[in-house]
Each structure stands twice: as structure tokens, then as C-alpha cells.
Image (tube, rainbow, N blue to C red; front, side):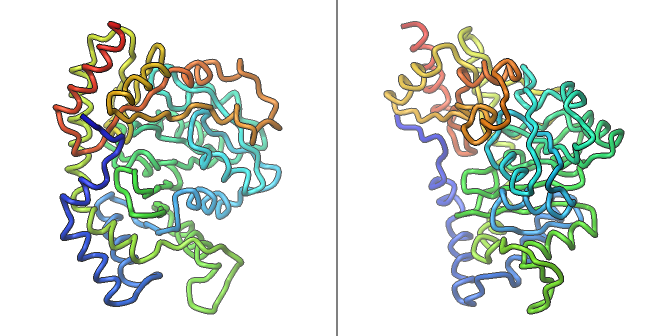
Length: 368
């Protein structure tokens, strides 16, 4: 049996008629940038998610940069984020001229250890980029209160957590704004780069939309200098075709995670993903911690099972952040876990038979 890490083809085939029609409509109208397809998706996503404003952008990375720029973050400022994330969460801080400040992770849930944040806040701290990792929300209620008490912005990085919840409130709806990626492998994915900003703040929404469109809300009228980060019509149309299915796909991911838990629970050499009380984990990734991680990954690959590492080297250990002069002991949990984490195949269409096969091979590896 061959099991890919993510199977986008099977998803495409399941809604082929809708996707093909969406693409053909854009081609027929030759409406490739802006226009009704982008507007329609923004409105549909905002309505389904329960938010006032959705601003489509070129990719998820841009959305973080745009948000921080429009919140006035720049040279001399500091922004706190988590040590184990994709570099978008931190490089965008640097792009504004600010300095990233990393925090270690929670040993059970792998998101930022919220109890370490207050000790990292200085007079220069302007925001926290709170990453909701793997499909599970960080303790956003705790962080939201801390941000309000300290007078700093809370920006939610929701790239991996579309429709995740904590106590009934979805990712992206507690902070000043949420940043979303629609990279193809995301729970709601386009067929190329795409992203959006989500906010209930009217003034911030106007600023972000203007900045992402060359500082303009009206053609040839530029209020400020901006950048070019627009969601193109083809990707918007594809996302609109997928949107009616996202809640069902989310439930299928949750069901698949339950099957993994069922078939893997007896294997003592691995640690299954814990679910924070009161949260809805949407399982963008199903991440275990495993003894002999590298050997296990090779064994699974030899048996037709594709896995991935999220992330094999934490951000403070990257060459790009050598100038921060951090030490491994500054992030003991994240440094330990980078040697143990392993992401197993996860997508809505993954069959129970495939999950059983994966579990059997993992058990077989440790027995041998």
C-alpha cells in the first residue's frame, strides 16, 4: 500500500465538476485580478466564519507582514512568537524592522507556553504573533487577557487552524486580526499561493486592503505606498468551490484522528497528540512524538508511507537567527521535541484501512 502524506488529487476528483466549472468561468470572463470572484469568496468566507472583514492577499506570509505594518510595528519594536513554527511567523516580524522574540513551547500541546510570555515582555514589545499549531488553538483566552493588560496587540496566526475553536470561539476572532494561509496543503487550500486577513476592526480592514493593493482603494489614487499582494481571481474561484465542503472535511479529519488514536494507543514508544480541554482540534497535522524518530520515518517510507517533519529545526536554531544569540537551554522543550516529532498522513479522504496499515507498520517497527 502506498499512502501519500496529503492526497490533493483524490480531493479534486471528489468535486471535479465544481472545480472545473470555477476555473472555466474565470477563463471565460478573463477576469484574473480582483473583480467579482475575489469579492464573492471574501464575502462567503466572512459569512461562514462569522467575521466582518476578509481581505484576500497573495499568500499567508504577506498577511502577517501587512497586519504588523498597518498596526504601526517597526524599527525598535519587539514581537513575541513561538520557537517552533514555519519561518513566516518570524521573518515577517523582521521585515517590518522589528525584532522577533521567541518563547518555548507547551510540553503537552506544542503551541507557545503562555506562562512564559509575560517574562519576555519589555517596554519595546508591541505584539504577540500567536501561532495555532497543527490545527489546535494555543491558549488564546489567557494570551488575550495578557495582551489587554499589557496594552499590546494580539495577532493570531491561523495558517494551520481554519475553523479550530477554543470554548466555541474560532481561531482568528479573539485578537485584533487573524492571518490565514490557503496554501494547497491547508485544510482549505487553493491551487497556488493565497491567503487572507480576517478582522472585525473596520479601520484596520481598510488600511490592510489599501496597503495590499499598492496603497490604493481606487484605481490610480494612492493614499500611501503599499505592496502588491492581491488574491487572484482563479484562486478565489477555486476556494469558493471548496468552501461548501470545508466543514464536512474538517469532521472527517477529526474522525481520522480518532481512528489513529484507536489504533496507535497501545504503542508505548510514541506519544499521541493531546487535545487541550475546551478546544476543537481540526488536525491540519497529526503529529506524534516517537522514539527512534528518523529510523521509524525511514521504515515507514520503505513501506510506502510518506511522513513529514514539522519542524526538524526550531526557528532560534536557524542560521537566520544566529544574531539573536540564543542558547539551546533557552528553549529546552522545543529543542528536545525537534528530534522526536513526526507528522503522519492526514487528509479528509484517508481511509480507515490506510490508518490501520500505518499503525500496523509502526507497531511492527518497534517490535523488530
